[in-house]
Image (cartoon, rainbow, N blue to C red; front, side, top):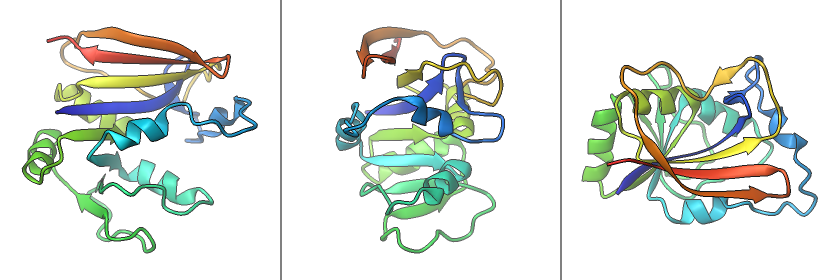
Length: 177
């Protein structure tokens, strides 16, 4: 049972630039569109929790809805999900602790936490068990930070690090017990 972050970031820990764009992810040359681990990661999770902005970003891509797992969108503003996602997208407006309890009661134990503000809320509640951070070799200087202020430090240990596509570093951290 784990709450897991899987996200790309700049060297200076931004997940989007000052215009909320993630175009910096496209600087990586991947002509054969090689999966660098995300699909394998998705196979091991039960459900996805993402913030409204992340949800809207995914909707802006020129692709079909990419998730087959249940997706829980955190929002106090959205009342309905958009069409064409199947029946697996739901809106929640709860605290991180209540979300985890709610999802665990539904049988979802390995939960993918996505979106900057959502990740920050789960970190503040000390509810992140593992992080897979993919560092893109760019310094953005400003933008949407991955990490915000938290009241107490949270210790993680590095369990794996690898270079992908000869330029991207993927590091897996687990929370120390």
